[in-house]
Image (cartoon, rainbow, N blue to C red; front, side, top):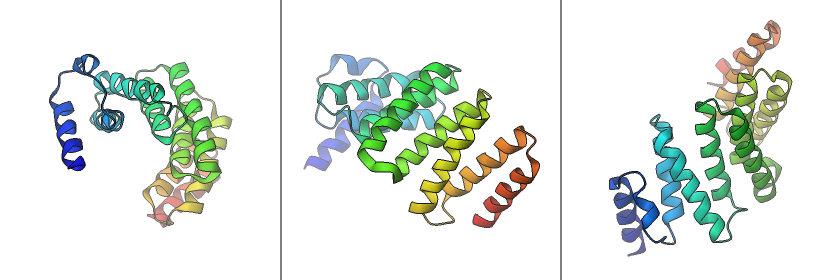
Amino acid sequence: MRTCRVVLLYLLILALPAGALAQQPASPDEAGLLLSRALQLYAAGNCAESLPLSEKAAELLRSRGRARTGDFATALVAQGLCHKRHQRAAEAERAYRQAIDILEKVQGSNGRDLAIALDNLGSLYQETRRFAESEQLRLRALDIFRATLDPSSPHIVTTLQNLGALYLMQSRLPKAQNMLELALGSA
């Protein structure tokens, strides 16, 4: 029965126009559903609707005393992704850093979600030409992925490709070649 209510609520959220959720009371599962929808919208390239939903999810989690949870960190990463896409580097960095702080406390130093957040911040730093910081974060993400995932995991392959691209941008050709060869060997 509970699953039916969650599915029904999810379908209702999908059908609502943007902004309509602000007038409705929060159910226990609403934050998770909002966050799922925000991530779907981001994946579809729609940050205009994704960002308010991830902010609403974070607000609901905070109001329920869940501001130091993995779900809250995921909401922050979703916000960071949208801020980065809209060239708001300071806001993206703030969201990613806060998510990383939470994830380090919740998951320890080897969580997959932590590695994803580290790689996202590394991407932001690469785009803003903060190469040394980007490299440090991406190497740390790679270490976590290697310790926790299968060697052929898409996360490992992508992180190796990202490091290769970072080294290419800096004309560090032997390192770039090494990372790209590793990525090809892992795929």
